[in-house]
View 1 (cartoon, rainbow, N blue to C red):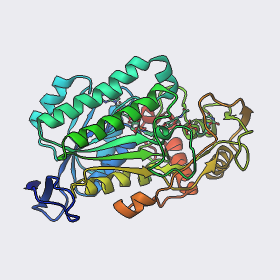
View 2 (cartoon, rainbow, N blue to C red):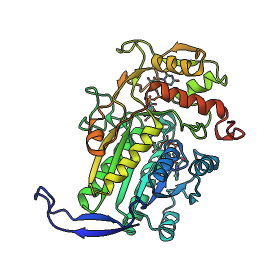
View 3 (cartoon, rainbow, N blue to C red):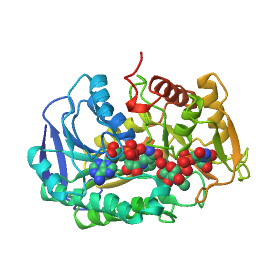
Length: 374
Ligand code: NAD
Ligand code: UD1
């Protein structure tokens, strides 16, 4: 556990008399209790493992709208520890307040939300209610309980159509064309305003690029409900024989092979980025924003070829029309996270595909499969 010291003197530059909170670790090992919202989901489960590996105790809240209880059972198996899990919907503020009465948290990592771009265009009010309403409920309850340390899952989607590449954190934000992307942008703005209004808040906004891959054990991974929207889960289902072929959405973009270029990042690297962000929070960092990407762009064809290699067989594909709302290229400049968080993605394309393939073959029906065959 931490005790918190309040220091109202000026900071090291002498320019700002911001109230500083310093965490004094009583134990050598990190032992803060971190609330993880959406901890049963794809990025959440992998991050819970890394937090536990780093010595944190973790409490998970999730309403399981896009996750199964099995995912957290497998996390418990991997970590060899029980995790307190609460089935709470973030739109239910009272339930959230009750949870904060039961547990004392030092910080919150906020993954919970809805993330399907197409669905957000059909159901914008649902997306605004869950993503924005859920987040403001969480922030209010945190404030009421004097828990003012937060890490938030944002997305490269906040940059809209890139004005330049690679994207650094100073690139303008807000040009989002769909309600999902707008919720990420609006939430970022809410968090900036909150930090301006009250300097006791420490908020790290992480802008993810394209998370792929799975845990090395093959026990957990991405388990999309219905038809996958994203490239790699779809390709994996094609490779395992569940779907006939992957549609390549356009081969006439201004990219080396004409197909869309993205910055794919292994979900384990991304998860480790959250531990680095948690350490940053413990320095009382105020508001910070970081890209979490590799800095390397790969095309759709690069990804299909890499997965074919991992699977040991070609992944059938066909060239289709461009998908509305898609951009040609998007990749990060990850230097700020390297400099200030000491974090860098280390897993390459082959490893992303091998790990994805292991998860897919061990669990052809995701968490509904009959346990991982080892
Ligand atoms: P996910 O859907 O697997 O995880 C989100 C979790 O939140 C799920 O377990 C879901 O059941 C839960 N949830 C949804 N609504 C909730 C509510 N009202 N109350 C409580 N729990 C709720 O998604 P993910 O891929 O793990 O993404 C995690 C976060 O990262 C999301 O905020 C997402 O928008 C963001 N993000 C994801 C990607 C990506 O490609 N996976 C990219 C950029 C940003
Ligand atoms: C998408 C979302 C983005 C979200 C991100 C993570 C859109 C427009 N953007 O990003 O807001 O943050 O997922 O969830 O939906 N592709 C194919 N065939 C497919 C699927 C994709 O060719 O069946 C191509 C796309 O055109 C793109 C690339 O693969 O060039 C990656 O697509 P995807 O995995 O959906 O991610 P993004 O579009 O980058």
